[in-house]
Amino acid sequence: MADHSLLGSKAIGTILLKLAPPVMLAQLIQALYNIVDSFFVGKYSTHALTALSVIFPIQVIIIALAVGTGVGVNTYMARMYALGRDDEADQTAGTGVVLALLTWAAFALVSSAIMKPYVMTSATSPIAIEYAMTYGTIVCVGSIGTFLEGIWTKVHQSSGHMWIPMAAQATGAVTNMILDPLLIFGIGPIPELGVAGAAWATVSGQVVAAVITGIGGFRIPPLPRTMRYIAGKIYFYGYSSIAIQILYTVYIVILNMILAGFSDAAITVLGLYYKMQSFFFIPLFGLQTCAVPVISYNYAHGSHDRCRSTMRWSLLISSVFMIAGILCFVFFPSGIIRLFSDSAEVLEIGRIAFPIIGCSFISAVFSLMMPVFFQAIGDGKTSLLLGFTRQIFCLVPIFWLLSQIGLNYTWLAFPLSETITGGVGTWIYLKRIRTWSAIQKA
Image (cartoon, rainbow, N blue to C red; front, top):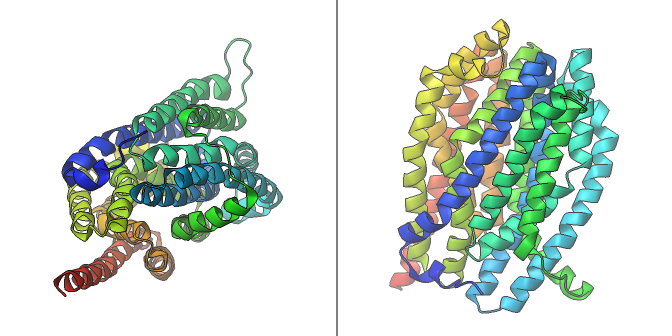
């Protein structure tokens, strides 16, 4: 049995330094796998690289459903541990597995039905459309590994166990990296599968990660009546995370549709940005993951000062690391793009887009951390409001308005939307802190 009390007793800096490194390492490997995936696909065909950019939003939906449900499991389990109700925590983990399987089955059916009309909205080249259809169908129908791993990873993290998920993601990523060149280009008796090979490599890596996290993460599901009650709790704590991630998909699809009016190369640039962004946002995403159980546990105990301290440490560490991303995107955009594409058009667009988007990284720390805080304390409405503000109320309309001036201006929407959302989130957060202080003094 894990010692869950450390979340409420040890110094916050010590807790985060204990929990964060394995999470960040896992995400680093995951980001490298995404980069390597794009590297090999880009060497195979520029149209194939465009196909990956088109399918990326659908993959985000998979992650939204899998990880969002996992966040609900994580948050509720942390609360049960804080209250000494370990049996209910185990029942929550078992319920999460059933929800993962049901969600995967529904998603596989729906995505297969809408794949062709979706692809037609975001790509113009017949070859890119064909590649996107092939890649998208395989990764969607074969996504069962992602759904299960999303639950079992959070089961481990809810009790402070970060190394098993790290090992799982690392092994899955390495599996994908090894299979990518073998299946894409073929070697010896292995036939050349092209884009389909990249998809099968991705699915294989996900299944490997799920098997590893399932060791120690699997729990027997409770009786149906108990399961219904716990499922409601899981989605109560996880719905904002799911909605925010799905909004992320919606706005990428809309941005792709706007960029399609300029060229497929512009869509490729946006896709490359999101692949590289995941690499530089690792400290931020890692601290998001670690902050949820820490804040949730301490909030359940009424330790508001420790919740505040968790946010201060998370914001500070994320901001320091984000400077590296700013430097790379502002000063070395061409070098980054040439890793994946030799297209002169992609390079020309990216040299302007990357430095502008890179300027948004510090603001992004606040716009992305504040929703996590409210989600961890059970205020899903505020978390969802901030998600809507960032992705729908700000980014999409600003991007569209600036597209009327020209392609080069559209990228300004990123720093503008991050700054607005970060400001709004910080203002609401400070109001909540003042409320807590007033209650403590009363």
